[in-house]
Length: 287
View 1 (cartoon, rainbow, N blue to C red):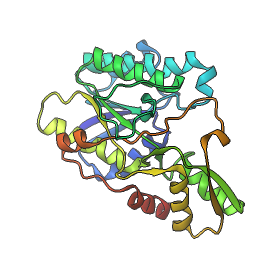
View 2 (cartoon, rainbow, N blue to C red; view 1 turned 90 degrees about the vertical axis):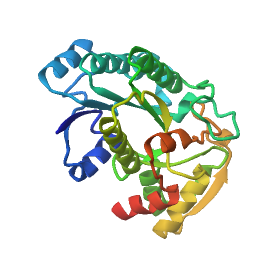
View 3 (spheres, one colour; view 1 turned 60 degrees about the vertical axis):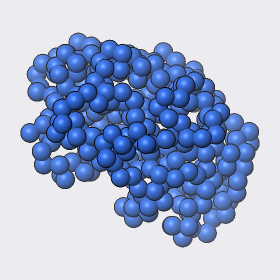
């Protein structure tokens, strides 16, 4: 039995892992959030590991308030950098596999072809900068760290674009949604399944798989087209109108293009990845 520590367990990905846990009988999960484990405290993390036999840690915890981070830089870096470094160091000390979740926001969005792991990262926001520093520090301190960059995460859990659009479409006759930002939605349950598949691969064929990987669903879309798909699948009568980003200003700059190239993760771990439309159907069915 492999014991897996899940930090940030009350978030979308943490809850997605809980949803599929029953399908993985060889794993035992320890779910924690801030109240159970303060990952910004090296002492607290070390004490937790000394009291538990941890074989892997999936770090779903993060400061994700993208706009608030612009005026809350200290806390963003504390959670997205310092806490990540703590976990990476302790995982190495206790020989536990560390899986850390990062973001497409490490890129500035100026590229026009899907970003590979080897492309230069140049974040345009405090949030992106804090996430980039965290993932780099983790891999540097613990080379076996597996960093998974993902994008546009949604699910039937928590607060996200799909749930919000679904609610607003029932309340409003018109919704304006930006169409000049392109990326790929990622269903949290698909990401959770990929993580557990990766851990199984790592343990079945021991080797160093450390490094950065990209994972999202397949395909490319804009926020506008994503919203239109939600409207079509839910049968809403609301009109969805495209607008440019300058009509919806935000404190933090969003990447205009953040499509991720997933060839590395597919080749390394033999993953089969669903198209975003198929996964959206599944999520809406669960809602």
